[in-house]
Length: 386
Image (cartoon, rainbow, N blue to C red; front, side, top):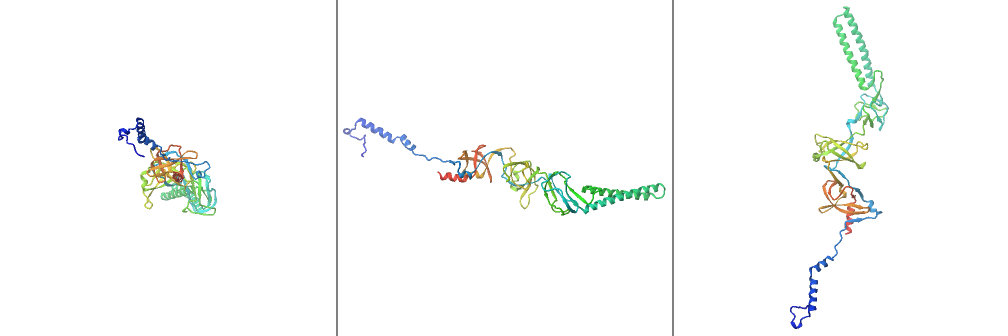
């Protein structure tokens, strides 16, 4: 089709005025920027997919762990390995002070005992020797008293010299001292002068028997390696930490702690730092730290624990496990359950990220339900659907 140039058309071939007007209007419509923009705007923009919908009975829901986030005290460092231990101020490890043989056991593991209660009865030649010494000392004391009284009487009658009386007095003092020694020995053993060779081993404190290393007929010695009985108050426990040298600046005396154990995964026990060791172990390069813990009657000695030092300023943060995070380039995301079966990908801003957890500055609120396990699978499914 030949293009008509209206401006160069000869006068004899001039088009009618209404034709020229139509051509001008058509030209403006075709080359108008507004028209071009309208054409561009009609191009379809691809939708951004950031939500996954799972049916209520979907097996994929069973593989996801969804939990609500909550505010916790801001951690001062990552969790440290620790162990629950006896509070030595409320624990007694009991050995026999005399050699003998166990005759009968009066307390079993798990029994509650009172202070002074008999734990074991044993036959002890040592106790027999102590009783014999005490009786001989009493007899000797009685004899020396009689000798001293007789010497005084003879001195008054002018029969003997004063030196004899002084010797009798010295013998009496020695006999009194020996008698006192044997009485103290029996008192330390918890036996009286009228006892026989059966020795009763008693508990020095009230508590629960948590260990027993003696059976009927066993030989008992004071220098035994293991205590015969261990008694403690189970409500009073310590937590011990072998603190890495690099984390020493993050822990101080009196600092609050959050303590977790495998037996109660959804519960946090409160604690505080009691003391910090004065030197670094040259082999492990660690420092022993002793902590008080509120066991709530649930913790047991020798349990392993994860102990997190907390901020002293009572700061609160939202803490999530690293398994809930998806990192894409410079940004971090989590999957949030907006309603049952509807899971949406949301960008968050991290505050601190440690080896096992991260704290959130922006993007989450208390009560939001996030996918704490299985986020990687959801992200892969989301990427495959784009």
